[in-house]
Length: 345
Image (cartoon, rainbow, N blue to C red; front, side, top):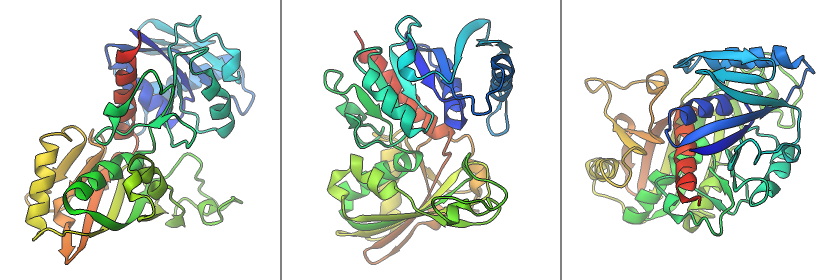
């Protein structure tokens, strides 16, 4: 059993916690979280236990969850909670932690956690893109490139790059990707608010009840794992007032276009049943009728290509790719943790 330390217990942290609990070789040994309101630890512990046990999107936790003043009690197992403690201040080794997962989204926490790799812990895994990581791993693209002797700080990239990169890699290997435009129709994030507020990006600070165009890094994060596509991708995001499931529109210009969409579907189907099994799926709708975003909540695949909206005009291919931006992404992070854990001595 490989001990995991979890920094950040927000949307990704709690969803990842659930998935780690379901993996026989992994166990969360400690959780570190911020306490922005300066609340009493016992009160915040109870609140976090409540949010873990009752999740609006994921549903009830599949097991017993209780709170102690400084810990979570999950199926009777005590998991210490630490509030407002810098990552370097905790005795991770004493807690039995070998892999530290930085899931807070905080730049400061990341900067303080990363140097612990190879010292206080064996490895640090980041649930976001980070240029300074020793390697960025995306299942279906390069997970097999992990080298435990060289890679101590590992990025799992972003949810959208995990959806885009396997599909673009497949298309590039078979048809050649000359250019691609990626537009994400992305659900609300934890920083969104109902009312307008000041924000570094003006549109992102507008009410979460409207559709807001905001910058997207998916072109950059995809090129991190597919460097052959660097300079060929552009991206943007439309933030929408939904809870979960991202829709990714990919308009791809191909160097060697296929004859028709049937040929593309055949390629996707073979990959989904072969090398990309568990990562890629092809959606054909219900009786030929298109489904909607809510229907893909809880889907475990990184990318679900919707055959109903596949279009080809000369060299231009359009794809609609669905993905559960929380659940599917946390599955891929857990896959990465298993890969790293298996290589630990």
